[in-house]
Image 1 (tube, one colour):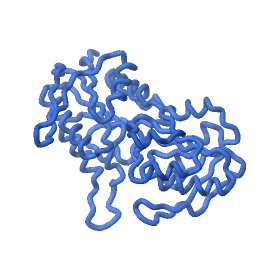
Image 2: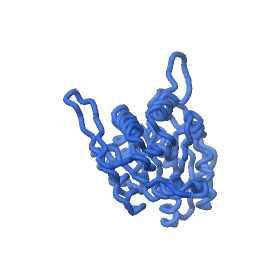
Image 3: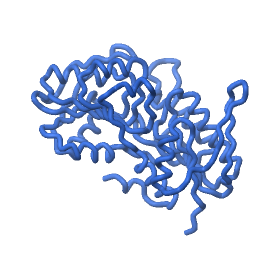
Length: 314
């Protein structure tokens, strides 16, 4: 079967990740200029011909979320109007994912709104990593390839050969992911029950399992304000944990996250490059960034060749 020629573009939210994906696939990125009118409106002009091509746009909708999202939508519309054969929105970090239900009266379901906008702008499919909730795939009326960063973390953690390891779920909702890590890494499992006091403040209340004298790993899909993981770390240290490592696919680091992480008893903070680190985050001397480029690059190659993406994972 003959495939349309492939071309990959990178938005301005995470250009280094797009470049790394291009290196993995051994191809240069498509050329596009993102400029602004005097009133700050964005305009995108493609310098590469995309007619009849299989196009991929790499753009995380991270801070500033509204701006990066709008740029993605403009990019998709630009490709659609330039007669691209197929357009895939590669959104390593999908913003607005936490607003996925009506948990109070008179509030929006913004995750569904954004899914509609991406499809309406011209995307034929979406590729993303560790959505805040797996059911978000159902919010899209186009195909979604949902990747997980578990293989990237497992490769790194297995290489550290951590003894007496316990994987801790920082909340009940993370129990399935923690159980997967515990199984792969041959570790014990513990679960923390938390109580949310306000939208940004949580308190770790109780724990199932023991961490006394053990090394601990906590894994989550994101670190946003860091309230959950820092509260959990304080409890773990008080319960006798030795080394405490926290891993998260998306390092959002919003609000007081950096200050909280500096004060928390973490030996290592591990994130991926779905979101580029800003200046304040770089001040953390115990942070380690793992690249997701090969994972995304391989998924892009398989999508282009109409091969299975799910077979990448056990």
